[in-house]
Image (tube, rainbow, N blue to C red; front, side, top):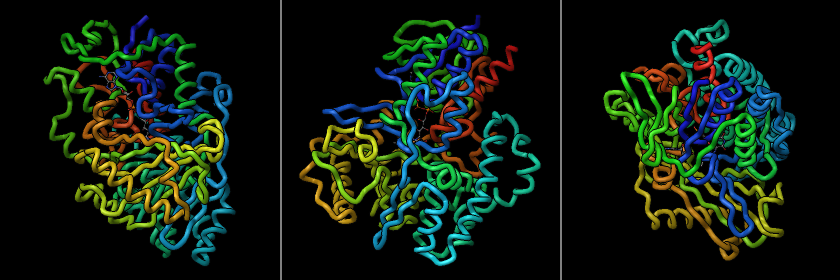
Length: 485
Ligand SMILES: Cc1cc2nc3c(=O)[nH]c(=O)nc-3n(C[C@H](O)[C@H](O)[C@H](O)COP(=O)(O)OP(=O)(O)OC[C@H]3O[C@@H](n4cnc5c(N)ncnc54)[C@H](O)[C@@H]3O)c2cc1C
């Protein structure tokens, strides 16, 4: 039986480990941190539970499909609830509430701009068609050749790869608040809406068509489920196991070095950040130069706060976006002229609003996220300065005082991403999905220089986010299973 080593234990690593163990391989995971989950780890403190990274459960079909591939269902592992409202967006002069159905959302659009409900239905119908093509066809291809993108359906929509989502949205809607609402979902792909092809409107179908869900107990329940499944399939999981080297003999990987010991393997797969994974190889076996990595567009990093409040908060929902400042300016400060944002947009998540298991009774669990450019200077003083900025805005927009109700606050930023995940430039969500960084144009799943060495995760194919990471693991397993069939 071939022995496979998987580096890291994020979604992509757990996914590939499950698929390959299920196919009969002997699989072992080596994770540097003391707990599994990578960017999706969990913080528990004084009765509060925080998801450290992802909090939006979108594309429930992809999670279901993952567990179905092992004759399981998500409900075998966790309870999934559809959120209503899905989320709230605070603007400087209004609040938009996104409900759990198209009819509720269309009514809300009509309230803002007369006639926009019909335009929205048309836009989402088109987005649904793109979702079907993207998820059932394109995303399941391994990014080995440009021809993978050429299908009857994509040829008919070729214009959508050369127009941006911003152009498409502005063609149909005039109100700036509706425009920001419809540009929000593609931020998950990591690039500016003006740089994201309009074909990616499938993210709008994921948002309005499929809805926003919450696994009771938090996103970490998915990691727990995958780790349990991996264990049942015979995967050996080693934590506190930083990999120091990927060993290569005569152009073929022979295993890894971890905690100073050599561990033999027939195949090595790294789900750690791609750039870091390549630094585990001798220079001659690396595929991409430092210049290559430096020139790529990365999804943002983030300044995050995990806050325990000793009261229930008012006028908020489970997910809240604070778009009460200039969206364009903040995007420029992330992508065009990287710097700390002048007036940041931010996101606030209070899972204890809908899930009482997340906080002690009568208390609220608060997670705040400011997207920022990767590689920025990160100091305690800057973190505190931004905490004050967003707390002022939060109190003003939601009409309540909360600062005296903070029991504790923890923060996480660029330096932590580098230190805890070996993240390149402290990126949070990997490499952005732009036209020139899509499919075969992304760093490859399979090493071109080392035989039996593979890569998975948010810096490779298909891209950033939890659902793409699950798919990335499957794509690598398919390549290996096909090679040794
Ligand atoms: C703050 C934040 C919010 C997010 N929000 C969402 C969201 O709401 N919805 C969504 O879908 N996605 C979201 N994402 C993106 C999503 O979390 C990621 O795309 C996904 O978790 C990436 O998984 P991965 O397997 O590629 O990498 P990771 O989770 O980074 O896993 C890589 C693992 O490799 C380990 N590792 C690194 N170096 C070594 C080494 N030398 N030896 C051993 N192990 C090593 C790391 O410790 C880590 O555990 C968010 C991400 C962040 C950071």
